[in-house]
Image (cartoon, rainbow, N blue to C red):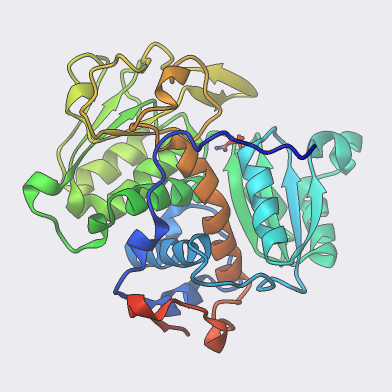
Length: 362
Ligand code: CP
């Protein structure tokens, strides 16, 4: 007997077409990252993030069918730290567009590192074996070490407590699908988002990258509140970035009295500190009974511990599953941009004309 799944998607699933309706899309900006490594959110402009998210939306909505866009490329996924979402979604993104994969899970055991080989020597080898490497590592400085000899582009898939720039792309892709008006120049004050972070951006790479990317949309953010157990959850550089951004922000230990006013909540409790994972900020828990605004959304890079209760999974606040699922499409878009496959789209675009969607390609 054939089995059939009847499980429905949990949480909200904004329509990717929200990002592509009746709008010109200028992909020419993506020419800036052709052949380049993606190491930090600071490399992206707001316009580049928008272009990547719109390309992702075209792919997710199937308005653009490009099943062989990466054909002929070999992608190396080298993970020196455990991962569920990042490695699998990068590999899924590659396979969906006919790239080939060399997958290295548990890199510390499965490469010459186990015998004392240096990352810079491993980088030299990667040049011969692939066209792009996706690297996750426990050490922040691993990117620089492997980069000493690397001549193919590298995508940072999380480096210690440093950054996780493609997670930020997945985060903002989900937010922009949910509220595409954020793409507009500047919203009226009453429509700007009140953003809260339950976690410590200075110690958590995903939260760090999320906050950096948030500042690209600062014109449409009313206020940022950071709820953390630390006295200074930001560190010098992020404090300065927030001060320079010129939007109201505050750090507090007090979650009560904060969450009820937030439109968008980003939370996390796993930090990679020193040489191991630590749970931080896990006292700031949300559950179905938390006093959230009716239409507030929650994002979480996952994995979660006890801070994000399963009772929220079926709620209208749950954008975290869509955030994780959408990561496949932004990673497809990023591969296409870095591997110079955007300009090949040309007349292969299969868009539904009633949307009057016009595509400008480089
Ligand atoms: N969001 C994220 O980085 O998850 P993984 O650790 O499972 O890759």
